[in-house]
Length: 132
Image (cartoon, rainbow, N blue to C red):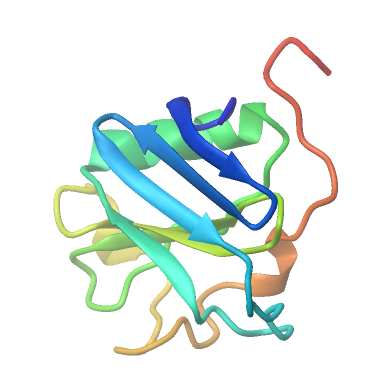
């Protein structure tokens, strides 16, 4: 919660419910499997504007959390992935308004193809800025 902000509403051994800017999000681990290398699915996706996309990438970097380079499918939208500390993939999707979108690496209509290295965003530690 320190990286994305928000408030924990429910926290149990296999489930957490939190509020981020009015959105209630629950994540459970009962029956979950770990993702195989190279897979981006399943993942959680969030729509955002270009300013939020850039700000989030900068904030994650300041926390020592790797993210993929921006990429696109059609040269209009911009996407990026990062992982939570458990390894779950999170996508930020900016449908339009990212100025450099036409020049970003291209991925296929489904999946990321060779546009990014999904395994390069794994990490073991992170910190809030100024802590480490």
